[in-house]
Length: 245
Image (tube, rainbow, N blue to C red; front, top):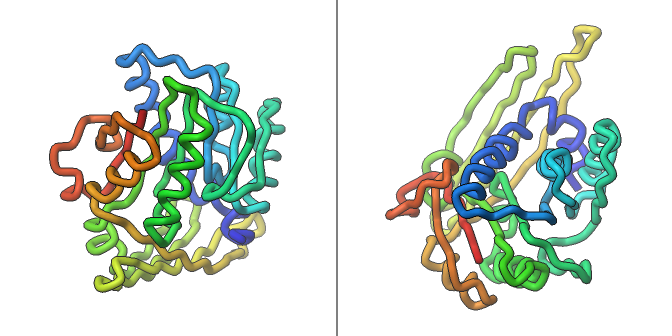
């Protein structure tokens, strides 16, 4: 799974969002006097967040359902001379027999789970792996985002000459959006390599997400924007960040 996209993920700049979010997390941690010594990034992709955390002295590990992503994450960590453990596992059912001060799940990875029960299963496994005073942070696309932003055709060319064509359609009755990404990356010889990948995402109202977080044991839940400013009307935004304790 994700074999094609794993190869191009970092080249397309898709690692920029979790890095930016990490910088905002650190500002939040400082305000909260929270200094995590251990970290698990679920749906870690190419390892960008675990590598960043490890480079700052945190004992960080990663977990992903895609073996192709895991293999690239290992290569990326090795290139930085970092010894990071990566687990090939399903975030809905993982059991690592250890606990962490901080667990993250970024770049709307949770939206790829297409039922509310799967979200709850994931939250339950996260809670089981958190220290008593640990924090779980994840972000997600909102229903508003899927309806308004995942219902279009968009063509983009970056500074390196890579092209990405996004074709998305929203199914309002089901509350899901499906997007196909056609990508052409410019190689050193001037020719193009490419792939096409299709993703489906779903989202739920914030009240429903809060309910299942509470059901699995989280008692202190805050919803913010990506700058960690608290939101009064999270369902009116395109992206929510949940801070769960």
